[in-house]
Structures are given as structure tokens and as C-alpha cells.
Length: 280
View 1 (cartoon, rainbow, N blue to C red):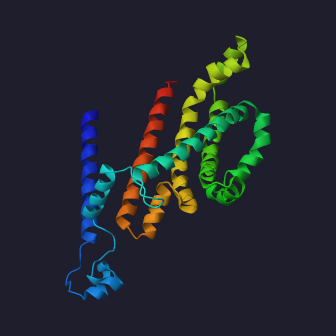
View 2: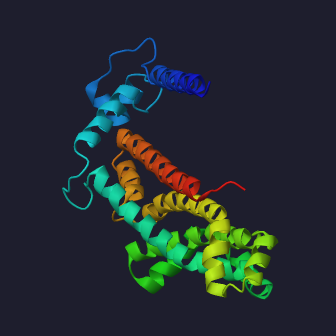
View 3: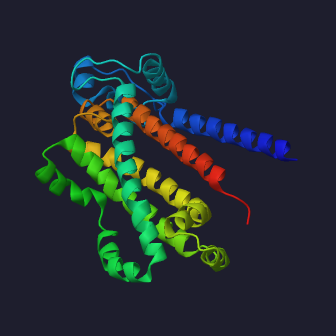
């Protein structure tokens, strides 16, 4: 039954994909009554406008050809403004993983303290409630001013945006551990460190992993915007630079790459979350 359902879902996905390609192709076809125009006029107004094309967007065939060129040669370096999409993705991933890892090192221990101590929760809650709603990109000017480095500033922004989901989920998971398990540990006179590692952490792990999964998704969203602001390298800078070059095909390729990498990151954290989930 499950296999049949999977095949139907796959068939539906393929059908929707082909339908999307068909609509995209039709939307970018030249309009009827196309007329020959003077070449000089075409240069002035653009080929799409001069030929009466419905949309300036490239068609799926053009984007497919450009995407294939990136696939067969993803890593090249022809100067500051001409790097392969593989290099740009690598820069973005390194920044995301660095900021995400630093956030985990801070958020999980602090989340434990908040979840285990009502006093610590009451003391830190005003700070969390004030800082949590602030857009991560609002920290970018301050980071650039103090850190003097665009790459480190981007990592700091990722750290900020990754911190809150992990912190809040960790605190919630720790506070939600069953009282019976804690009472048993107290009866057996289990030490606080051993209780945290052997009782609380396994019980709170699924909730912590959910927070990490949320954080990695937000981090990947934010890095694109941050790299558009600071420039230099990264997939966000790649998309913005291609806009400056008016290369719409490369912009679409960049968007597809962002989506695919984001999906992979989410699937990796989802698998890790399943590994630490145990039945009640």
C-alpha cells in the first residue's frame, strides 16, 4: 500500500513539474504577429521588446542549457566577479555551518539552564523577548562596524538568527521531561551532570533537533540576503552580481541551487532528528 502511494505521489510530482515547464514555455514564446525590426532599434530597446516577446524571462530550454553549463563546470575562478556556482555555494555553506555551530554551542547549554531553572528562565526571558524579534539583517551594520570583515559579519548574523530557535526548543524540551524520570533519578541519587546527560538530554533530544532543523532553514535564508548586502563571495552575491549583469538565466540557476541546497540541509537534519527520536 505504501509503495503504491509513493508511486502515485511521484507521478503527481512529475506531472506538476511538466505542467510548470509547459506554462513557463508558453509564457515566454514570442507573441503573434511578430515583425522584422531594424537591428539598431533592437539594440536600443532589447531583443525581447523588439520582437514582441511576451516576457523578458528566458524559457526553460535556455535556463536548462545554462544550468547544464554550471553542472559540468561548477568550480572555476576567473576573477572576483566570475566564479563558479560551486565555489559560491561552498562559501555560503561554510558561513552557515560556522554560524550554526557557534549558535548550537551557546544555545543548547543555555537552553538547558533555562529549562532546568525557573529562576534562570525569569532572569533571561526579558532579554530573549527583546532580542528575538529583531531581524538578523539589522545586526549587519553593527557587525561590519565592529568586526571590520564582511565574511565574519555574515557568520555573526547567521549565529544570531540560528540562536533563538535552538535556545527556545532546548529550553522547552528540557522543561517537558517527565517528572517521573526525574524523580527516579533523584531517588537513585544520580548526580546533576549524569542526570543531564543520561536522563534529560535523551528525552529532550527530539525537541532540540527540531529547533536545529528550524535554525538551519532560517540560516540558509538569511545568508543569501546577507551576501547580497556585503558582496564578495557566496550564492547571494552570485545572484545579485548576475542581476547587475542582466543575466536572468543565471539568476534562475542561482535560485534553483539555493532551493536544492536548502532541501538537502533540511533532509539531513530531518534524518538526524529521526535517529534520536524514540517511542514513548
